[in-house]
Length: 622
Image (cartoon, rainbow, N blue to C red; front, side, top):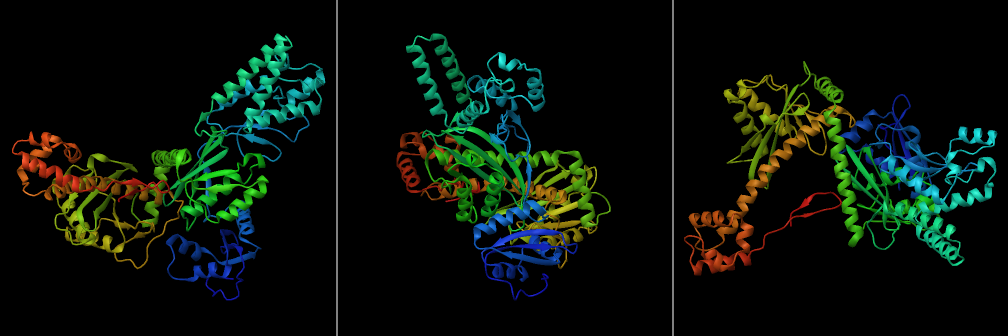
């Protein structure tokens, strides 16, 4: 079927579909509860620009029906891994985390530090943030669980020579290479170590304590002292992990923070109430990404190659995934025990989730910062912008204008500057719009005010190669009109629309849609976000001052002079609200009666307090 055809005979069952380009390459994979309804939505006119780009790139679409949504989820992930479609989610680990690995499939399994993709037949514990932490942990563990840790070559050489290595002589290996222990005995040591690392440390420590007491009662003090040192070693291993939950919980805590283009995922592994592992990775968002679908993608990636013992029975997330029942069913089948995926609502688990989400936000900021400061990446971004917009040269100086207000009040604007792909804060400007009519009029006023000052133009090393307006076609048309009135019609101006991430040219019928993974779009988005940040800072300052004025205006008989005196004396509205009648009386010009009136009026008013949504990280004004 071609995307231009009407979907008449598409089945209504659950299934997975693939869009292919004219070279028959798979460019997008999706799943649906009802294939007909889902695919029909791609043939409408009201599509997200990135989705529209995918559909216009596609040449045909095919599908496979399955029995239920769970099978659809499995097949979708398998196809994404197989075909790596350009419009689906793409993963980029922000670093290669080390694991403690055990080669279970070998006759004499080996324990070792490992980095890279997980391999079938091996069991992994972690990941750890630092490699030295694994080496230190392993040194303590081998004292209690003396299993093989040497490479295959060392093992063969020792076996051929009939002499064990140094680790056997210092009791850090049971020397299976020379037959000091058989495969069955060595397997028991391996199982004990794996059990300890899986979170069953209390059982192991209880057993060692009982054996130490028995040896002591039998007056085998040498054996008792060895067991005592073994216990101390295991306690040091446990002490290296942070206790975050008091009830010996075994859970993974997963949070996703994202912008329009990328997502950062943080995973904290909690065993027996302690954080024993942490990892993070970055995803390139697919088309039509939502909080829910991104969480589903993250869970599938985290547990796709996990062994049953690596999947906890409780997975805490900052937002419920799309198809949560199917995700739980898949993980339950793999774990052979019920796996609960949920959003914590209160208590220590909620607090821990907020911490993990904060880590995800910081990881996203850090990733974007590293990406934006790389010289090669910045040069690539500027070149891509030049080619996409048809500029004569790379835009070495980009200026961006953003307008901020709430329902038309306290309107302010910002103008920020990027030179060579980096912020040039010396040339940042702020504007207060005194008599705003609408966004387009405010944009035009800012352009006229900024570019009409010859003195400001004189100190610049060069005029902006590109002026970016935060908005769509109406806003960019207003900016272009202002530039024409100033005789600067040759200056290149574009609008970057929020959410849609589409680029509008003055008078254009259709926008330019850059590839979602392009460095050009990333740089333009960062320019727009910086302008918004700079504008919103001024807006909050003015709104705060306006709020103070409105609160004090509600107090009868309080004129401008006395309002100014009160604020000068107490320093802030908050401190004024906390003041007593006697303290307010000390302000010049305020008598006992008016002081009482001020206290009564302030107590009758309630100032709204913002709260933070842990799912999105947004400030919610109550």
